Structure formats: structure tokens, C-alpha cells
Image 1 (cartoon, rainbow, N blue to C red):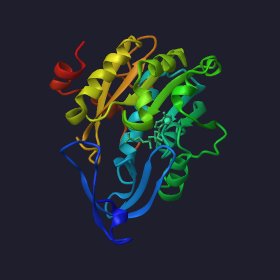
Image 2: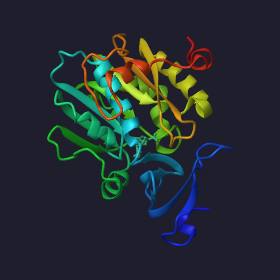
Image 3: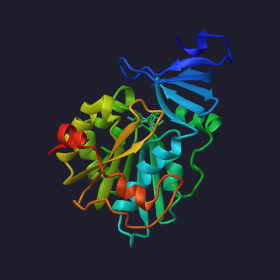
Image 4: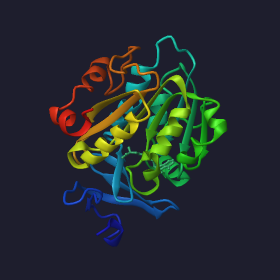
Length: 288
Ligand code: SAM
């Protein structure tokens, strides 16, 4: 049952529908729901986690713990892979409609150009209205494009002005996000990077989505010479331990921070430790 079938404004149990046979239940109140041209968008309020964005039944972010995901998606690649001498970095954010990744990218004053490509303008609007943790879209460094990012990275004029970093902050490989996991998308993203560029994304929750990590890494290895997996623990994603991947075009490693910087979750120790992975990830999911 969806919350809008129940008494308006009542606290009710919501269950994540994205993972078969296992679920996360949160007792919360529905604030808003609408079907956008791309997905079913719901915003809830939870007594502990605060406002919660759900797309097509999958929890995307909560106000309480979003900083973990956004800091780890952003700062590990930017601080681990870009040379500390780089003074004018350019970053392409793909997806990220809640604005959390934009907020984190803009924290670095050496990032001089940010392009964000989100397919669904309704996510951006509603997240600004209801969640409020987004980065500043008015910052002169920022350009926003509303389009399918798979098409965007295929454009010759985009590839002609390559980026230092591409951060894919997308939904899982279902619905509009599916295209962002294809070999063609990866090849085009690679073509949109400078020779020393870095690419990062999440690859879901290995406990339940092992094949997504296995297949995702295998596809990236076909294109990038170095593909390094790291992890962070995020309670509100079913499976708790999330896999991320960072890939460099020239093969250098992102495991050590090049610049020292501290956020609310991220710090240089967390950066290094994030690359320590459970044995079964190595042997069963990401072995060469
Ligand atoms: N932290 C999140 C999670 O749970 O994986 C990701 C959050 S962010 C809201 C994901 C965004 O990716 C959504 O706003 C969605 O509209 C966007 N998106 C999905 N497919 C896309 C595509 N093909 N091009 C651009 N943006 C896309």
C-alpha cells in the first residue's frame, strides 16, 4: 500500500520495493507525490531521517544521512585522482537531481566549471522545495542541462571540451538510469574526459546487487586501465554497504588523497580506509 492510499498526513509504514524479498521499512508521513514524465516521485517526512526522496519505489536520499553518499561520491575521486597542482578543474555531474553532489563539488574553490546533466527537472524542483540541501545552482561556475546524460556525452561538441572529472550520481540500472550502465555510455563518458581525467559512480549494494557490481566493474575495465572499488556504509540503502568505483584514464590510482581536506564524513583516513574491501567482494565480484 502506498502512503497516499491511507489517511492524509498520518504516519504510516512505507516499504522500499526495489529489492525482491527483503525490504526497508520506515514509518513516515507522505508530503508529496507525482508522476513525472520519467518516474514516480514521492517525498516523505520521517521523525529521525527527516525528508526522504523516493523515486519509483526506491529510496534515493534522506536529509539525515545524505552527506555520507554525496561526500564519498565526490571527494574520493576529486581529492584522490586529480593532481594537487590542478588549479582549474572542470566537473561533469550526471543525474544528481537532489543537488547534494553539486553542493559537495562546489566546496572546492579550485573547481572552476561544473556542468550538471539531469534528465528530470521535476526532481530538481521538488528537491529544492522539500529537501533543501542542494548546492547553489546560481553559482557562476554552474551550468545545468536538462536532458538524457547518455545523449549528452555522445555529442561531439561535448567531447571536444573534455572534463577533469565525471561523477555519475544516477538511479540504479532500471528506468531512466539504465542507459547510464551501458558500454556505449561508458565509452562516451571516457571520450568526455581529459587524458588525466577521473570517472566515478556508485554500483549499488553488493549484498543484494552483486551482479551489478560484477558486471559494472567488468564493463568499466573494458574501457579504463584502472578501476578501483571503494565502499561506504549507508543505513537507508537496503544492504547497508554501498560499492563505489573510481576509474582513471591514464591508469593512476585514486587510493591516496592528493589534497588534504575534511568534510562531515570524509577525511583522509576515511578515504584510504574506503578501499579496504571484504574478501568476498574480491573473490566473488571484482576479481580480474
Ligand atoms: N543517491 C541516489 C541513489 O539512490 O542512487 C541517486 C540520487 S539522484 C536523485 C539520481 C538522479 O539521476 C535522478 O534525479 C534521476 O532523474 C537522474 N537520472 C536517471 N537517469 C538519468 C539519465 N539518463 N540522464 C540524466 N539523469 C538521470
